[in-house]
Amino acid sequence: MKTLIQNGRIITAADDYSADVLIDGETISAIGHKLPLAGVDKIIDAGGKYLIPGAIDPHVHMELPFGGTVSSDTFETGTRAAAFGGTTSIIDFAIQYKGKTFQQTIDDWHAKASGNCAIDYSYHMAVTEYRPDQEKEFARVIDQGITTFKLFLAYPGVFMVDDQTMFRVMRSAGEAGGLTLVHAENGDAITLKIAELMAAGKTEPKYHEESRPPVMQADGTARALRVAEFANAPVFIVHVSCEASMIELMRARDRGNAAYGETCTQYLFLDKSYYDKPDFEGAKYVFTPPLAPKQDIEQLWKALKLGYLQEVSTDHCPFNFNGQKELGRGDFTKIPNGGPGVEDRLSLVYDGAMKRGWPLTKWVDVCSTASAKLFGMFPKKGTIAVGSDADIVIFDPNAKRTISAKTHHMNCDYSLFEGMEISGKPTTVLSRGKVIIENGQYVGRKGDGQFLKRGATIGV
Ligand code: URP
Ligand code: ZN
Ligand code: ZN
Image (cartoon, protein in one colour):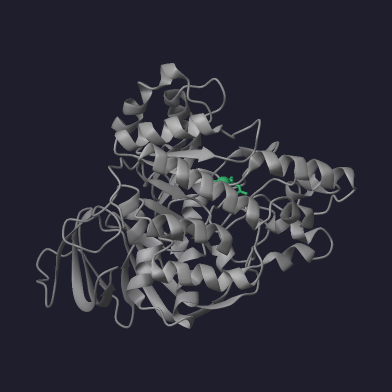
């Protein structure tokens, strides 16, 4: 199958120019002007639109068991929603439950994802215990194309690791050419604070924020960055939500360390005043880390622009308000942590970036290219180039829309961005050469998405 996309304006992280793109099978075979029509099966006119590499969301949690319930998007529904929003690759987290080997963990995640995804997918290996007998398994994980490891410095008794484990995992990952991702907080101090708040009858959603403020995230971030320095290994801080944590990252990068980080869409648009919403509505915004003070929002945008943060993910981990978030009425510790977002990221970041005068290339970088490089997928993913996978989004910069749970495709009964009016919308989405979104309709099939074997990190 040969597809020719004509008249588009190609935007990559490096370039902004007009040309046609020829796709042969799953990959891009030519880019140029007046490309021959001979043998072409399908022509798509992209006049007035941008052609960008398919967006990559490297931080999602589909059907994740958490807090006595399960995140409400399956790999099928969540990846379809992602496709609507112009995301053509996701990386989920295969979480090692206590007593399981890495291989059992990978197999469990394959059982959920395989044959169900609309777009390409991979997992980070979330290590919760690292027994000496597992050291040999590291290489086997990497051989399967899982080159990134995740550690939690939060959720004690469930996912949290101690500092020795952090050090050993970072060292093993670094030696193998891998990258360690860290959820950086001070889980122990936060646990005590939570107990004190609950004992004082402070049970509403807003106390989730009070129990884990920026200073506790900055503490975890500083510790993770210093331990990575000690292990001589690269490190990536996930879901940086506040200026205090970002500053620790900035300092580590200024010291010359291979230290990277992301923020998420919710932290770029929402602030902690959302926890004051009446009728338990603040529970919709209970995720970890929580929303930060309003003044931090602009600092995060600046950090992205200046390269102190490298990309924007969603930490998509949806729970319905009815029946799931409600589990925590009268006890904020029982509100499942997480929110929906995988569908709206590309458009939201476009809208925010344009309002701040960013070049289009930077928008593409933080939504696609930087993740492709850091998580070992470049140049197969993350760019429009001859030989790359034909993951292409045709994006209408002038389309306007209002975000709403009534029209989104995520399996969640609310939107974090309900009523927000934004410009820019993906109109056509191709995944490895196949059109999967056309005229606002999903035209792909469950199982089109393939497991992505990833390689070594390319530092950015
Ligand atoms: O609240 C969140 N972020 N839930 C998902 C798990 C995590 O910490 O990333
Ligand atoms: Zn986390
Ligand atoms: Zn997460």
